[in-house]
Image 1 (cartoon, rainbow, N blue to C red):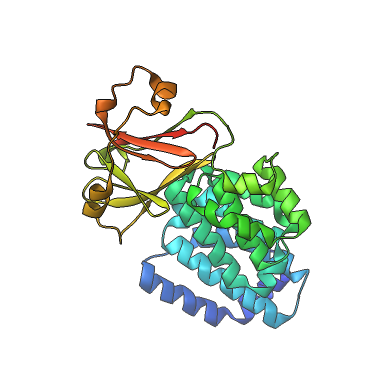
Image 2 (cartoon, helix red, strand yellow):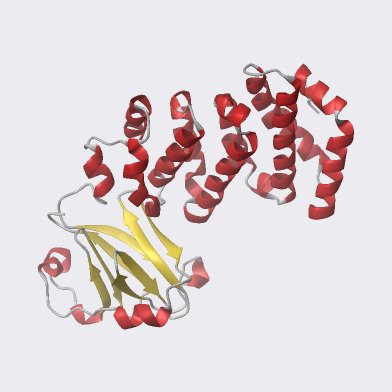
Length: 323
């Protein structure tokens, strides 16, 4: 098996071998038997390139120890939990991004790893097929990411691009905090040809009524609902429930997500749900022949229409004209 070749990393692991062995044994007590070959390969293929990049910025032994310690302990957690095994390619690609941003790792090794892992967990939950795409987007901005705040904001921007629609509300304020170079880089990667106000304020790029897809589904087939759902607008947000679980719905041009709303009672959502009272103009634009009696609940905001149908487990979304 390929072995570590970076002299500074070899010295650190050798001089502090008792400590690293202790941490390994403590992790085995927590996670059970750890695959030593997997750890060794991870150290060579992932940790070593990151440490090498940081050494170029700061080669002080105490700084090397701080960085290597952080990456070793976090590697044991990642492998012990099974994440680095089940999602090896995704975590490897994501962690290697840190080799391109060594300035962050030198200053905040544990915090940078934690932020990265948090994004990956959210992507696995809401947009698992977009993890590698998110990594490519961050990579394309890595030269302009100078601070830990840059990393946080760019990470959120690109998670939004990958479908995490609930993040959009805070992005306009986030965006204003970035340097002009990073702003232009991100806008280019997001594919925006609008001014920033329209881009972050308006959920849909089109100006005509258009079907934007469905969200939900039966829980037995990786959906969300055990019973046909009902929805209601409460305050500024759209909530939906199947009478057992409650969610907040977020939807825009990049994706649709249902976020658990544990503090909102299902009966409260149902009591605030509204049925269609009049045949509004959007019915004709959606489907002139639609049987409106099958609509069980409906919410119409300034820019979005959402409704549920009797005996259906899905939410139906439309962008509205003149938004």
